[in-house]
Length: 288
Length: 67
Image (spheres, rainbow over the protein chains, first blue to last red):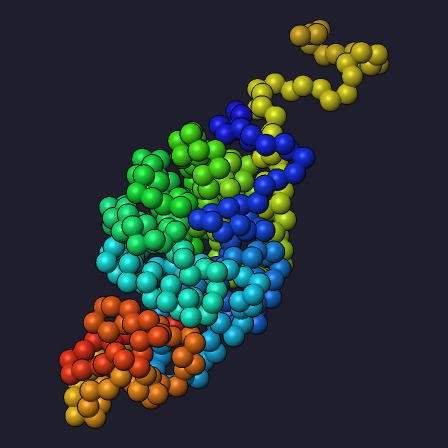
């Protein structure tokens, strides 16, 4: 089984990931949620090698502020922030969250003020996206000038709709958010890569959600993903900083393997050592 | 006194005031905030000229960890 998408560039080096006009040094985007402490988050972001991190927009806890603000632990000169619309269940709410996130990043002077990770959920148990609301919100936000990175399921038809609606990147889930199940339907992901890159080889597709461990990240890149976005797999690992390091290496390894081109899968073995001049007798009397 | 809703909770304030005056009573660095009045974002540059009136619904949001 060969990969459905053939890289067009030299394999000697790689182009950076470009999404919505943002050029990222790392193909790994990491979330900032669910860490035990802000310090642990900061150290994990550092170890991941990522230069783009997601954040959420939430009501400020008024009058009883004793917590730390996450922005005191993120170097805004080092990281491009990607604000999300996590927790929204309607296009209307997601658009509001996107505009509020944009306003905060604009006043901070961070490069991430023109883009958004759009997430419109359909169900609080599975955290699967609502495709109708997502497409609606994507079109409206794109019309408002946002670069929209769309979280979606692994459905190729929805992915195509989102690209048509103006998404700067389509971000199919490997499996439900935070589930750690990895890539449940690699074939659907391959179809998404094939469809969306058919006449547009550089169109960025980012596998978002479901990663459980490093091999899931490598697999996504080997299949042809341009980027991977993950959060819980690092934040809830027993040792988040060490897992962040593993994710960095998995990103490099998976992308390099994709560019190098995997060998086809064969039913039978093919010897690595010469078959001539070998001293051996074969059982079953067969040379086949 | 007039009543406004801030982040879903009723709040009594003395009278109509600007967004900037309202924020003076909130203990957060204004850099980290975005403000909505009746579902419309108020740009930072307009805090001094945008009024908060009786019955307005105000959202004060910041960034938190998320994926």
